[in-house]
Picture 1: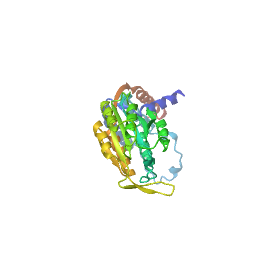
Picture 2: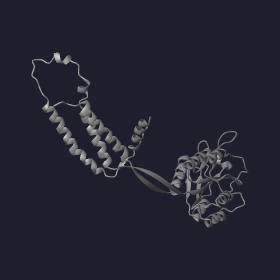
Picture 3: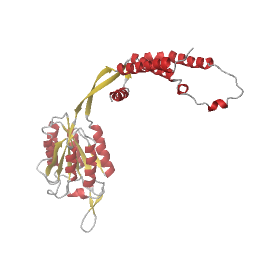
Length: 339
């Protein structure tokens, strides 16, 4: 059992082994020439007998010594190969990776007012926004992300967390008619800012999405933008909705209504805080916007690698001696040729 373990350990070692002095393998070139010369010489030195026909001789049985006459030469070659391998100083390396992550704390502020039921995005604006936001969350596994929703008022659906499974579950539960209808952009932004108040991350951002005009709430959106600026929170704003009219669901069927987005306010919030304003007039554009923000706000990952090398010549030496002893036994005892 110990022999089998030795073989197993050896083949496990050579998978990742590197040679510190590989130039020793140059010795195999003259050795290969000597072996080739010996094979040629033995072939030329074989005794021959001329006979009229060799057909009767074909029926004679061949002894096992005749079948394995090349065994000593093979053992000799293997012995030299492993001994030269030992001289080449095989080494294995143990590597330890230390990773330092400078993450980004992010709050997604989503508008869930009645206008987000518009069907210019299929099935509706909120449905598409939730899907795109989920993809964004899954693409940032090292960041802490929170979720704020707002309509006529705002509340925290999920605080900033690294537990993305819980966050995605709470995002999936976001729905209409849970709070008073309306569009309180200032309250949504203020609640998102409050979620980042105690954050120690070097980079803090808010992605605020709205499809309407600020018409409710207690906090002035511009005042909230000033607070975000003072707290070094960058706000990316997204205007969601197609240009012109959009179909809205009603009990009697879709009714087309004018899309109205306060782009001037969203641009002011973004500019004041060092962010950018985007306009998403279809589902594909909204997806591209989140991808663009993802690229701009990259997490910084510093990786340090510590490497410890260990010499592994012992197995090569043992194998070399094993084949050398086998060579001596086979040549001078088993396949011995009398002069």
